[in-house]
Image (cartoon, rainbow, N blue to C red; front, top):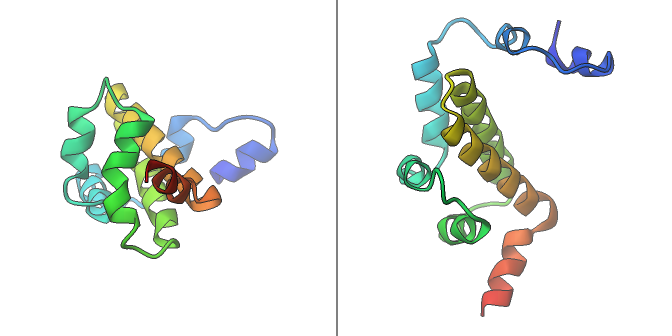
Length: 125
């Protein structure tokens, strides 16, 4: 059963049910590296160094140079990668990293949907 089917039934799927939907032909380490490579090279260190202090201001500062030089459609891949990484870290009980990556995914999705980052930069000038 796919995770979306559980939502149609009015319940959230269990971790095991979600994991069963992912391909079995790769290891978690390979998947982690694949999705980290989708993000900027310095992203992993940024999130590790801000586990307890991540804020909207820090996310804006980190992403503003990257996002301004990329096509807006790429943001969908970036927030999806962030959420996938967050899920893997959450399953591995690394909750601080999972939280940071979840917040990052939400921030990037909001930038995609409402162009929040653009307005943040306009207001900073």
